[in-house]
Length: 626
Image (cartoon, rainbow, N blue to C red; front, side, top):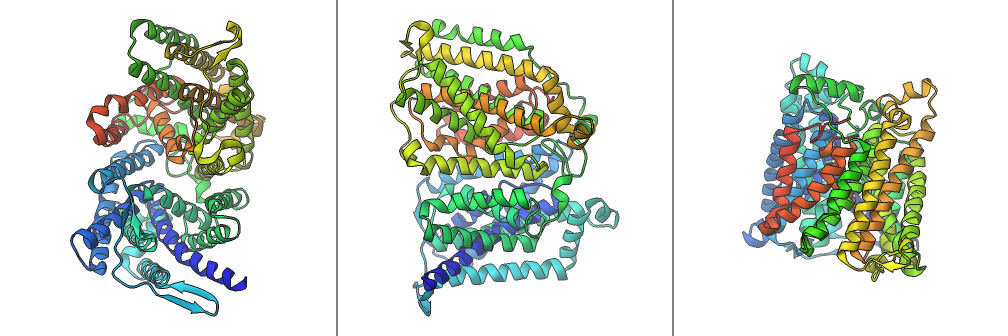
């Protein structure tokens, strides 16, 4: 038993070294630009594929292919800084973050086009050997990964401490304005940070390809999230903390896989992240800079959201939010309800149904991310709770649609309140990272709770909605489901807009602007935060329940973290805090990929480019942030 434990520790240190390299990339970029670079996972994936091309197709030696991969991805990292960050320096903070998300989407889709969506075997040019230390053992690949990872970490440490550029990078991370006054070219330093992050991502991608002996385009997101979690555990502002967090995460994962089960490794890892956020939100070696970075729309520094919007508006022109009155949502739903009478095109009607559901879902995101100022990067978990709740209540218990939808909405509201409890003392980035952990934990529960969710098989055969108000009549036709979705979405958005226009909405926005000032003024901040999450959960649960009725099948693949990121992206593009903008963006951007379907595999590239253009032209959202 002791030997098995020792072997798992050694294996965990090997994969933890990979997480440490990815985490270092996050820490470097965050340090100099206060930006969470969500394209780091895509750079990791590209590093693996470029090395694969060199070894498998060009027949290059592995060291040559790996070196070329590191150099190419380092250059791509510099290009990323130029495209994603520099044009959006005066935009709200979230705009460049979402720009990196759009670039990640483009790179992953291009990888599928160039190299195929399927997993491909990575050729290994050396014979695998196993080395025993008593009864504990390591493979030559483990030693290679740990050795090169340690050398890269040591080289980076020496570069940061001994070279002029390294000292300039550390000075910029400490105080960018002071560094600029001392003559440091902070723009070049930012590019250097992105180049180093790209190089570290590429190296870790090559090492993972050697470890698993395969590459596939979707490998970027899971390993990017693990690297992100490692950076958080160690402290986003600390490079030694990134290394420590990566090693810790690797060991915990490996031990969980060995002693609890393979399916539990990710669940244990992200539960650990959530625990650290609650009890040590700055990480093992981090500092308190995260609390000084503003909220949902905050820019770098302690500048509140209103100041960011004002400063940005002064340079780009005034930004005026445009919103529908509450009754406008009822009118829009009534107009859309005429469509089944005007066309019998099932494909078009189905697309509009999903667009209405996403309008409601994105509106639920903007309640938390816009009105309360807590960026929700795990909202798809609440969406999934509503969908599974309707599956259980309608299929297993035979409840009518009215009762099933209300039950799903209430159940999701309760789950949202419970999920919000560990986030109440967090702010800024730490709160956003907490929602990310919640979202990933939710997805993993959907995947592993076989007795309730049926795991990867999901729910099938969810019956058509049966309305008790109509004497138990089932809405089996697409038109019937269309009218149900239009009615529920219109009424829910009407009530949500009334709530935002009320004193409760004004209290939420006051908490978003300055939580301490709101508390000092006598507002029960914790209660308002929990009410906000509950209302957001209600809307998300309704959207999930409608999705289950329309789809008739519910599976975990619909509720991933990537879906949560997409929801947040759409909410920001509509205008954070602007319910009309969120609903319109959710509706329009759900239809956009369908309109681009003739472009086949290029449609997601076009979608990503459209996101980049909209972020550049309208960083405050299509209809303006409230």
